[in-house]
Length: 132
Image 1 (cartoon, rainbow, N blue to C red):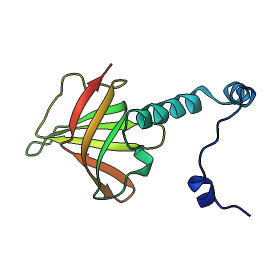
Image 2 (image 1 turned 90 degrees about the vertical axis):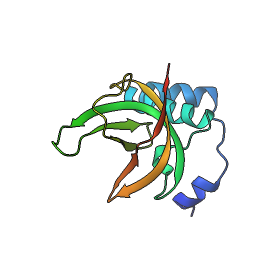
Image 3 (image 1 turned 180 degrees about the vertical axis):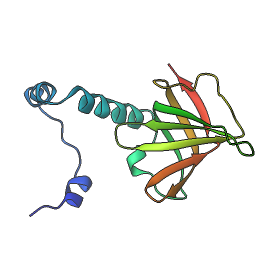
Image 4 (image 1 turned 120 degrees about the horizontal axis):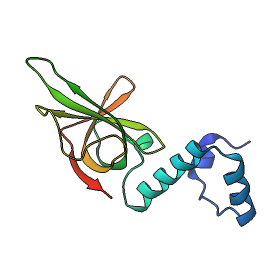
């Protein structure tokens, strides 16, 4: 009996035209969008967010879903959540109030060192590139 691990190590097979059409009909828009984001990230050479490990230097790509400002008097920083369909990573720019272009719905490519805070992946002060 094959396990989930066997499925991951097996090469991906091309679905037939009919199978792809059927999947598009029965899948939700959100599922299709998530798959497209992951495929796009992989094609560009980025690591899917769902596969990043702790203390790993990565390049990830996705869409900003949330931007918040921590207005603490002593320590302020800008936080954004980046998602690519396979997972979400929190981006934190310390000492920043705003970053022009980093808004919800914007696509970004970021590089940095991943830290896991419990179940949340975090990249502090990532390098970023705004995508079209």
